[in-house]
Length: 332
Image (cartoon, rainbow, N blue to C red; front, side):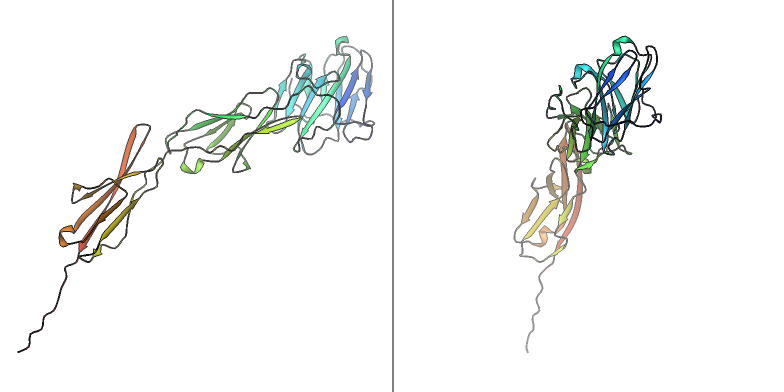
């Protein structure tokens, strides 16, 4: 079975988005519970003999339609599903009632090849649109979709080193999967790939800007369910540290207060040294009552530890304590 471009035929009377068709051995009759509905289904030919082909041709489908689901019988139970087509993924799925002789066209029309006596009965079409409108009446056997969950193959990926796969769980037959980042629908790109019937989203060579939030949504003809936004924890840095203040000339007798900053996840740790001699391991360094002995090179080192790997960068700042001067004048 596969999807094909539909043949053309003249539409007949009536039709709805929840539609039953009675396929007889030598006659294909049309069952129409909603004569005023826009969607129509036309049997082509109107009467069919055994071992011939019959097309249930769909007319006037909504432009918002994103999926077609065909069932055998006056039902939409999963066990009676024949075949379905998702316009979003351009993929078909066959159900338990699929015989191998059905072909689904891209407009939702269903072709029966070499019909038999066993094909006699009602057939039901259910459409899915962007508003998730059920589009008809009658009892449905589909249950409300459970709230999905996102699993990640690496809980702490590192920037520039790791790729990341997000999978929307659970796997549900005949459901459509959608991904969003910052409320925007995700499509394939240079660093993003959708696979596994759109259940899996892969991010290649993650960066600190890939944190999200991400949402996974599942849809079927009668319901939709969305996972709460998920924000990723991506390790990066530390970036090159910056020492403040930038002024390197300090008057004696004043206090010197230095601070060190570096972007990092997890947060960076800092250590100081003066002319090669270790000082405090803090983000800020304070030296009271400066003298010329405090002139020299102050080095801040930023480092973090992610998955057992330590890295560090340093900045050197040379401060000079200016000597005090005075002028004496003697009178003769």
